[in-house]
Length: 455
Ligand code: NAD
Image 1 (spheres, rainbow, N blue to C red):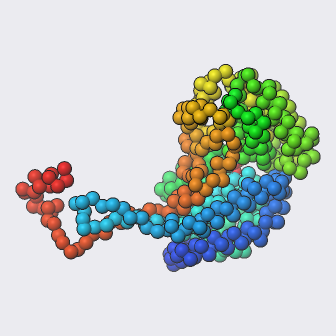
Image 2 (image 1 turned 120 degrees about the vertical axis):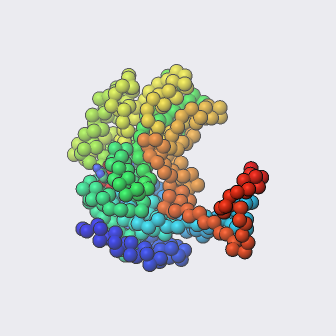
Image 3 (image 1 turned 90 degrees about the horizontal axis):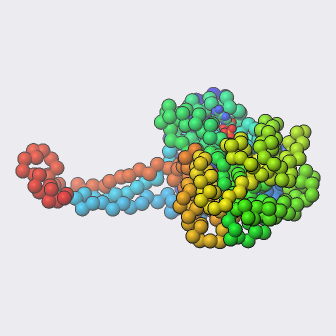
């Protein structure tokens, strides 16, 4: 495919100004929602083929998330699109300041395979709301999902407005040689660097939604059962292949045994004695990821789980105890159903372990102690945090989502998505009714008065 020609066509369409009207944007958001409703069964089939995703998980973590994001944008777009008034200093009077959000132009969205619908469509909602044209490059690894996404969007939208380009790394790299007005990338930290480097050539702004090791600190002042249940759910949905899954547990030595037993009980409740036979437990996306994860099993003592089957890419929900932090399982994001447990005596040790690594995408703390909550939040830095639950911070539209440091840059969801795909143009309106000559040459004799006025 000739990407330069596709971009030229999108630019031509963008320049007609059609995408700027609020009616057009609202209509496209409604069409997008309709498309998802119509394609729900096809989406379910694709995600089951790619990841063995349970239909309830697809509904909760993909379909509902994007539908709610669309509804939120539809509800608030009228207020987002309004220019804001800005106060003007006395010496600029008579005059007025206004800030106008305007669309950027052509947006490139590059998405990963783990939540292939949601992570392509959620940014698209922001791009549409802000009045842009969009090209989406879904992950080639979730092949069925990429095909459905392309079919669905091609059916409902003209390619001069929204287009899906299927393909792998080469396709992505070719697209990245083009000049976009914004690049929204979700994926691994190393690829994020490649994307940012390519964007720099055209001075294209980027949002990078990357990964990292999201710690989960458990205190003794908790409801053990609820904490274990919420952690087990957040860790093992999508077989652990979630960017904000609790990556590893930091548990006080005193409750370690009890807590691990609770997690084991939750796993049995959720997935039965044989998770391999459960319709509610996912599979690893491909052989490469499977092999990577199996190698991590050797990094600690398997407390339970550990069963694997290469043919079906099954890895049982597994808890491992680590004797040392100096192992691969603690050096890169796990991104699979293996939960390392690390113990601590005092909270300062847990905080130190978190702060040893790169800034995580998410941090979880389970504690009823308000002072401890404040301390952990103040002494650590993470893209987002959630106290006494996992993952749910992702679906609160008023909480902008994103990373910090090597877990990413830029935030989206709700109004934040509209903001990243908009340029806020500052405009000063001046009156032509009067003229004050103080700023014009010749300057002789004007300084004392200028100083009196401006300070
Ligand atoms: P990835 O970085 O390998 O791939 C993401 C996209 O980039 C794909 O579309 C792929 O085709 C493309 N790509 C891959 N290599 C490329 C290259 N060299 N040049 C240009 N484009 C390239 O990521 P993945 O394996 O699909 O997803 C897993 C990673 O994504 C994990 O690190 C995870 O934490 C992260 N992630 C982050 C979020 C978030 O919201 N922050 C969400 C989901 C996943």
